[in-house]
Image (cartoon, rainbow, N blue to C red; front, side):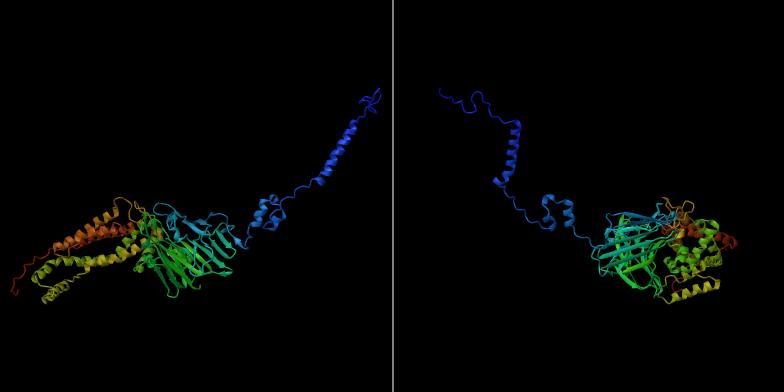
Length: 577
């Protein structure tokens, strides 16, 4: 029988099929997987990666760009710091305060933004603590203690730099330092409790060499409520060589800064009652002082006007005692006798000085009020001048008695011109009449002439002595200023008493027109006195009251006899009589 295809050897009936066990299958699978992993890299070569571009710096070349850290790249790109740099990160204000001052500094430029006197007796007319820095000064003028360079200038604007600041342990000193590695600036301020005297020191160097500079205070100084700063604020210096005080008005610098150099006892700015001056001393080397004129807003009026400014110094290292405060006579004497010259007593200083001493003594010892002190001192002055006033009254009474005779002489020469030779005859007859009756034609002017020097002395005392500033009396708030009432009482009272005194005084002229003119004089004086200081009006008013009382006593003691009737008919032409 033929064989079937299925009857292969080992597959026929009665034979088992060859099958791989599971273990063998797994083993073969692992072997095949290992063979694939091992042989694939040899059969299929991988494509080489693209070449990376060369980097600019060694650090970046050493690492792929993806692996470099941003902070490391920034550090590598930043320039290396210059040795010696010193500057603050931000602008800040610092306040130094003592029992007398409150001063605000800014570290931008190491300058003064505010300088306030804390004592209430120095308050302004609005009752506010007095600010000495003009807050309306233009930015171009700079703040006080900015630096000015006339020759070599530093490579950086040191007035805009941010200074590193350090306070002293007692809180009364402050140091400012700035450096860009080449330019170095240092400013130091030191203050003392109970004193208006401090010290300031500045130094500027560039590449190790000092740069000459000046300390600046511009845009005005003093009481901001003054309506016309140009009339009361000045630059000044005391010239040691000439031994005199030199005072410059603001108009001196209207065409540009004015500079002067020399040995100065002091130099700075002033108004009537306050001053800011450096005190180099009589033995110090030459100092430069520069005067400026700056247009700035006047706070009291809201209008623009000229304000003085000054810069002092001139060395690479400037170190000065600094006075900022009131022109108090006793205070100035203690600090430096030369500082007393800051008080300008005027032409009548020989009267103003003892007058102030008398007022001050009466105020301290008796009245404790300068208004009453003015009244008592005025009474004392009039008592001292009483003999001269009595002589004047007698002369005026005699003058009144001979007026009919003078009228007769004038009628006799009526119509004669001033160039006519007979005019001399008329004058001689009048003089003979005066001599015969013991009359001094100028005697009636003596009381007025005597009051004029005292008037100017009182004016100076009231306008330059800090003691009388803000001195009250009854309804008057400040004797150194006009009254603040809508209708000023003292000037009106002065006009009334002037009329009464004029009416009581014997007339020395028979001319009715001249008498009317004389009665108009009180109105003229009243117009003049209406805007002057209350203390000055009080002095004149008391003089009038005392004069009225003295005239009343004199008129009772010496009654005027009836004048003789004299024919005053003008002579006819051609008559010899």
